Length: 431
Image (cartoon, rainbow, N blue to C red):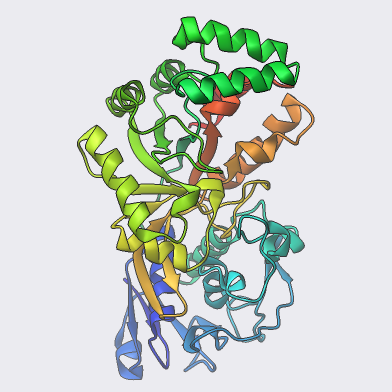
């Protein structure tokens, strides 16, 4: 067991230590504020305060884990053996920066509490993030820091015991538009037909008519293909269905459509079915609960996993709403238009609510790739190379590699053969 001495045990301190040592490194950890307990401990131990007690393993603390609320922090980016870092420490510290405060800053999404301009959908822009601005958005630096810290500890304490993590890959399929033409109702179908005809989108007109006679020819209906592909490579997958009424930004098939319900039931036999919360339910807990309850009734099991439409996250309010609706896991932590690690980690973590100074009981699963982000790349080779570099970063730290693709994009052939590309990705990066 690793023992950490500090002058004050705060919720921020406990949260950060458990994430780094227990969840990332697999090391049992305990804390003490009593010097005599620390001195008596014969195993691995760290002093985390302003001054070392003797000649022990010492990391000089920043004030961040002992403060409350949000403060204007001055951040200078340094370098720790090739890895960006900040909150530098003095020469007596075993590492050149406060790895714990820096990790908390990134995991808590501290910067998203600070004043910033949101986009049209109320989202935090990746360009405002410290990771983007300093060139490390594509690196899970929290995990990298943890493993480098482990190396230092093992030099000092060769007998330290840990339970190693294993690399894992999970494919998320976002189903916000299950069908392009089929099952969308008479009024919407006829209106779409005349809109396509008036816009001279003759290929869509032909496809629409074909699907009216044979719904299985719908370009977005690639669910059987995906299930078989996931079986072939034995990968973990999750299908996130939007199950909401029609609105400006929510245009899926009606949740009352029996064919749509049958589709969801059939997917639930082979994969985890979860909820993509509608655009309309953002900030509306009661509507969120209704969508969750309706989807749960279709698959006859609890719906505990969520994603937010358009990756809309308002920290911490979005997660408070999810907790109130009794979701246990969320998969929205990432950027729609930038690949990389929004919270600078590829390990699931619990949301720390800075306003309340508590850890919320919802586990956040960060994703590294959203398909919208790669549609802007110029070639299949460039896409594979970019995703491959992210995969290697995650593999190196024994993390979780999570990608988000939509059945809608996989049903498209614009510029890229998306189905072939998707198979290449899961074939190369699932192990």
